[in-house]
Image (cartoon, rainbow, N blue to C red):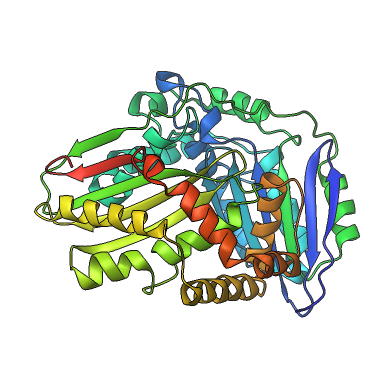
Length: 415
């Protein structure tokens, strides 16, 4: 594994910047998170959905460039870019050839510090947001995921981010400009850059481009505990979609890696996991089943999804609960070895991507407060033992824990 030299700086009055040169790379990827997430959006009719509109509008003109001019400028540089909104932040990602990195970063700084927020851009962005909101129930699996998040995560972090029709229609260019400049501050912003770059040059460039940007964002705080329990959205469909959710460790918790391995054995990592084998292959109870683990800074969430027919939905859920109970008995040596190899392969192969590394840098700074090299991450996997995984599984999947799992169902009948 190649030697990695990651440097971390504080620039622009508080923004964290992590830079990782990658030997042999010809591209550069920038991942910039700004603290304008959906958890901090106005409530209801006051402007719910603001963050999702922001993530679209900041691509539609910045600085002295109109929407078309800004898009053309990025296209001339060959920049692949995207924006997305989550509970804590809006994430801006851009990948370009190394020789275009400085110009690309200048355009991204215009996007963050000098967005135009013009009326025609608002109308187009609002229309896209309203279409997304109106089509939520068109994808029952996605809607089941939204429902489980709403009852499994504390407010306001349980918001789906699509807003409401009245909230989206209440947004104006004036309110958006004021809110953006109030919320988008260097204190709370994080940038990860990976590829063919020199850390000190990037630091000096960012200091120059962000000069005068100051302030600290007001981070949203928990206002109510998770609702938990069961929710059913009745739809006259030929399928039943179910999501079962349990709390999981935070990223910084010592048990987070053992939890990740347990989840991989039980319901992740391809078609060799227990849920796929027992629920789908052996019994044919569902057409899709899997387990995932969202590992955050302040909380974690373990979720199992299954899609079945209404006639077999209850049996599917019972079989899933049975497999959760069986996991208390432990992971086998073979399962552990396969899971470790799969996890390490993903880590190492991800290290060959500038996007994966830039995202990891930004994610580590947010969730852990420090960055890790690939070698450090792999070493942590190597230190994990079968006994640690089994001890953890026995605790988190004990009967008294599993019986408290939240359940979201989308389909003709409740479970």
